[in-house]
Image (cartoon, rainbow over all chains, first blue to last red; front, top):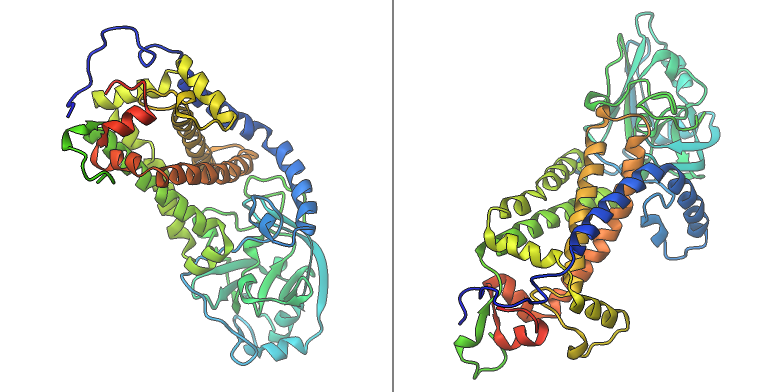
Length: 248
Length: 206
């Protein structure tokens, strides 16, 4: 057993040598900083390359790469119940003359609007040319009859946690849907199905998933992420300190 | 235990003291938390399984912030500082080792190494630098209101791609350790067999 390290008695390869380790460390730091500075250019190039690669990728692995195109799943709740045509309900209440509850089939029977626009997330990812289809929110509001003192909408979700908000003017825009279909398919559970909100001109956190309640309120009540620092008026390219191209 | 049952106990030599092992284990644990929470934030299947995005983000942020702390605390130990010196200094034998590694030359004679071989030195320096880049970009993503417009997206971009790279390199690091039980024993108990030391680290004066 040799308890300690012996003291140096002669020049030894371990005792001398050049400080390459420090240079590797500093070089890595420098590359990281350079990466941040050149990120906008790099990101555009990579998105174009990976977008085309993903079209030809049978494994789907490109979807796991950063900015590989496609949606990312964000849920703030620990688990979300699954709803279908049998048990899904959408409640419209608050400052309205005729509160109502819609089933999935009720919503499907109403006039549908289809839009194809980009989806922009506030964390950076963007999915181009995504079709959404559903009932205009303005139509549901008109059917319920918004009272004079109602100026805003509060949305609630059957995940039990998420909430969102819009002003009445925003909610009445033609590009705001109670969406039933996305990418020309019924919206699946992981994308917020069977029914989600779709607010085309705003960052995607406004498009609440698993929509279950529409309440007309007197004032804007900031939603889940807005309580945590995100902008309430989340226009793409004009909020949250970002300059993305507008989506609608 | 070595496979050789006849090995007398005095053939063990000390490779790591308490401080180096503590730094390694706490850093490894924090890195493990960072990787696990990152997977739950990033990989859709795990994200759907776990949910609770806010909680997972908080754990990830605090584990990342704590990641450099064990190394900084380790600086108080002379033995740890000495090992950092060995990791930093590259001698002529390290060039020989790297050239052999590039040519897939696995002969012992062409892989001379001191206490750490050239591959371990480069890994240590790179992972230290990469962790600091992750810390910096992570802080930009965390405190969004402190930074100008484009920075958050740029930091996210670097953070995402470097995370993927670190994941691959870290898997290599763990894979190497899985392939060398005596090296693992060295980090677990602090002791390695003299035979292993002379075979794998011929220039190390233990």
